Length: 164
Image (cartoon, rainbow, N blue to C red; front, side, top):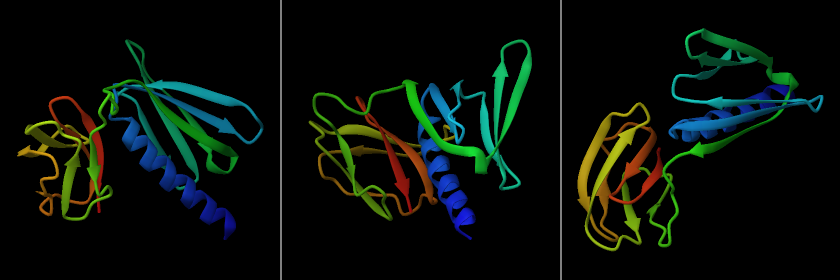
């Protein structure tokens, strides 16, 4: 039972982290094994990571001009998985803009906006889901959006949002 719970937590944490990081143009993913060895992958939007039979982690890397290579790892053999953005839009600047609350249910607002800005909410597959003009503290109704992960773009910032 403990093993199943541990795998479930690993699956949930990895999936959330990977979805956030795959929104970047390139992600560095490192898999640390229980025996101390590590595998590192430079991932792009053409690569895939998924679970097979709830027992294996599959990493598929598209190699330009040579098709795909894939590797499978038993979940029981994995100690830690980390993802780091190597090329992306920055979420921080001299004045950090942030969403509140996040995760969100129905209504969200932006903090630290200097002026009224165009705001677009994108699904992770790139579809524009909502477009509004937003100002500091304005409540934005997102009750019509399905549960999921989103990228929220303003004129100068890109933020991540979880809709519950």
